[in-house]
Length: 168
Image (cartoon, rainbow, N blue to C red):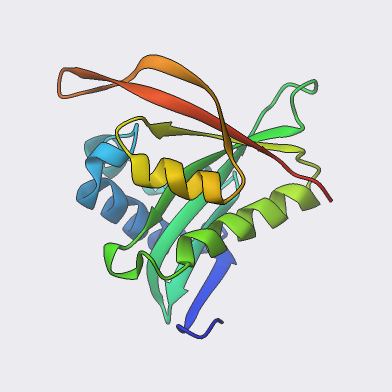
């Protein structure tokens, strides 16, 4: 627990309800920040939610209340298993600017390093310069763009691809 009373945990299947709550909050309150839609996730069965926890998911809690989330999606191919994608990054608006996003990112990076990941990658909306600056401060560099990577309400929005090498 840090000075703000926040703890970060790698959650398991028995914490599926906390996962569901914070993920749906993220998609509902910040729909333009994610490639996923609230409606798609809201429709998932409890079993599908549990299955999503087969990949590492880290949740920040204040007491029992989930207030932030991030996840890690490892490449499956043996030639690419040294790479993983950071997914679902979200911190409740009232806690932004407190360093919590950096702590979540550190927790997932430490886990990635422990399981042999050498490179973290992520995609961020070109229309989210604050997030791009945050990732740059956290050691990520832009490595490319996917033109029209996301279709949001009929608009094509570029995805910025970023990567960070993990060095022991």
